[in-house]
Length: 83
Image 1 (cartoon, one colour):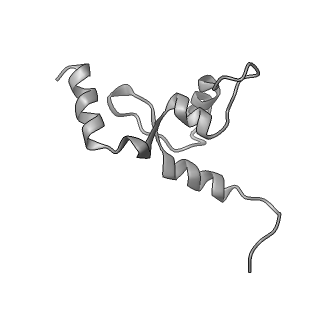
Image 2 (spheres, rainbow, N blue to C red):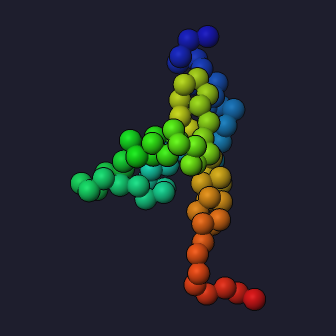
């Protein structure tokens, strides 16, 4: 199976709204360059340090949106809490 076929099979098997590319994950996590664009290098640095959950099927870096959301929610500090 060549790369194009792998991509097609992968995209059919997974709901694309559940998964984010590195660029989309950087935007979702609001990791930006000073110029305003998403900073994929900084995101990859977090991946190398194992600070965020990731998947790498067929050599393609992917992130599960629900896991990134859980990571953000788990990092809550102070502020108002409901009873």
